Every structure is written in C-alpha cells, then in structure tokens.
Image (tube, rainbow, N blue to C red):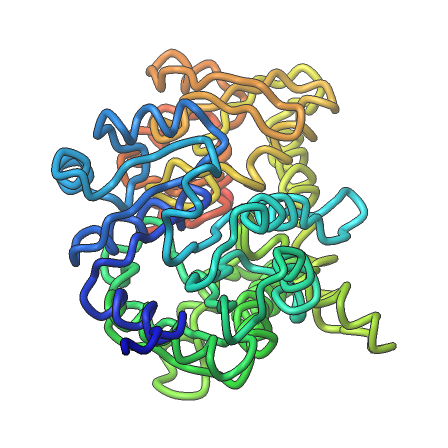
Length: 439
C-alpha cells in the first residue's frame, strides 16, 4: 500500500528538482528581474500583471526593465520558461507565488495596501494544497500575518500543513551593476517554521546567500529599517546642507573631507529631495505602525519633514540665483536637467525634480526639462515631454538647474553655454565658473 506524500514534502521535492512552477505577481523593477533569475536556473515562470502592455511585451520577448538583459529575456521566453498573463486563472498551476506589487501611501501618509490585499484575495480563490505564497513588497511589520493570512485561510486550507506563507523583502537597487537579484543577500521570514523551511529551500535555489529570520514580521521590519536608515542619514546631510547655505560654506567640500575618514562614517549626499519608491515612502509605513503600540518614531518623522523641504529649498535658492542676475522668478525661463530620481535610470517615481518643476511653474516660471532617460513624465498631475538640449535652449535659459546627474550629459558644455547654473547634485565637480552655484 502506497503512503500519500504530504503537501510540504511534495513541494520541497518539486523545488529541489525544479519541476515547481513559479508565479510572479507584479512584473516591474522587482518582479521581472526575479522572474528572469528563476527561469535562468531552470524553473518555468508565469508572470501575472494587470498591465496588458507589459504582458504582451514579455510574451513577445521584449524587455522594458534596465536591470534585465534583452537577450536573456527573449531567450527564456523562446524556450517557454517565461510567459505572462493578466489573469489569476493560472494560480492552481503554480507551486510558488511571489508577490511584488506596489505599496504606496495615501496623501495623509497612511499605508495603502489595496494591491497586496487585492492580489491575495485573488490567489485565495484558487489556492490549493502544496503552495508557497511569498510577499516581497515593502510594508509594515505584521502585514503578511495580519492581512494576508486571514484572506488565504478563507480557502479552508491550513497554514503549515496545506499551504505556506512567507515574507522576503525585495532588495533591488535599480541601475546597480555590482549587486543584482542573484548576489544580493536575501532575508526570509516565514509565518511558522514549516513556511520558513519551504521559503529557504525556494530562495536558496536562486540567491547566493539566504538570511533566515525568526518570523515574517521580523523580515518586514528588516526592510523598513534599511530604508529608514537611509532616509534618516540623507535627512541629516540635507540639514547640514541647509546650515552650510546659511553659513556660506560649501557642503560638498565639507562632505568630501569628512568622507576621507576610514572608519565610523558612511557617505550620504544631499540633493533636491528624495525619490524612488523606497526612501520617500517606506519609513512612513513603520511610523504608522508604531502608533499602534503608542510609540512615536521621532527620527523618522523629522527625517521625512526635512527631506520633503528640499524641493522648496531648491526653488528658494533658484530664486536667489536669478535675483543675483537681475531676473525675477516669475517669467524666468528655466531648464531642469534630469527628471529621474536617480542618475542613469529611467525611473521617475516620487522624483523630487517633479516637485521642483511644479513649484517653479506655480510661481510663474516658464519651465522645461531635458532627460533622455525619461522622455515623457506623467506623475502627480504633471504631464510633460523632454526637450532637446540644444545650444539655443541653454543660451536662452535664465537658469539651468541640474536635478539629476545623468552621465550622458556634457556638463562642461552646459556650463559654457548657460547664463546661470544651479547644481543640486555636484555634477559640475571640477568645473570652475562664477555663474555655477551649488546646492
């Protein structure tokens, strides 16, 4: 008489021999690179995304994420190892389901988990025994266990026996050529020991080094701490920038000298604000959750306040620069160089340059931007297209503001042709000119 194999043993075997089918929900900066890595080691991957445009591109083997190699994606699609769909009908076919969907904030800085909840509810409709569900979206501690678990339990299946649930926060640094999905240490926390065991087995087949923690809640806190660490330190540098402006000191000179110390310090740099999906948003997830424990996160609150002031400070400094050249802000012709939140990247989510653009427009300036990485912007009510960076554009501008330090811009030419330059990123390092003002 043959003994039935329990769901966990069966799932672990399928993970081990790579017969497991992997689902990735959300095919953006996190999901698509992960799907590619899984397919590269031999798993068949089905991506689920609400964007038909993304799905169609993937099924044609067309790449749209900078961290993914075009030829790798097209080859994997041709081999049948990656396919995409907009439907959750494929969930019963999946053995592991990785969720990498947005976790935004409301206008009042309250976590908005509509995508996580919506996706989990869809998965619950089709959930079967022998499946692992892993959330990679950044969120507050408790989301996996308090929000996702009850939804999945509506299937009637039992956690730890029939299905398994984990949190493994994404650690993606878009544009980073050194640290990729594969060689970035992967933190994994399970809802219970059985879930942890299965999740470790799954991620270990792709990631070089897996770091287990005691619970999904601990894994969630790891991620928001990482981003809060950066937010707080960026805020400190931004505050020093504001002070240096008052004192008539060059903050870049101060920082360059400070960062020569070989111990006890880590480089962080100022700018016109903070952008991307992580730093402006994720610390507020922790700030919000802490209130449930009657705990006020003073550092997080203060850091957010300082970082949100930087676009206004940039406009204030631009006004001063224009005034020194006998030009009021209203009616001034201003060119912003760079709308992406980070150099050499096409991602403009929460970019401070967008806020700078809007503030300048609201005060009557004539604003255009140039950014070959992000030729079209639609964000927070701003819709605009990049203009060509011609000699005439630079010569006719009353002020050029460098808001993103893309390496494909000839800053020597910009300085030579412009009447006035406000450099918020120190892109003009080494170029001496009286008409260049640093943040």
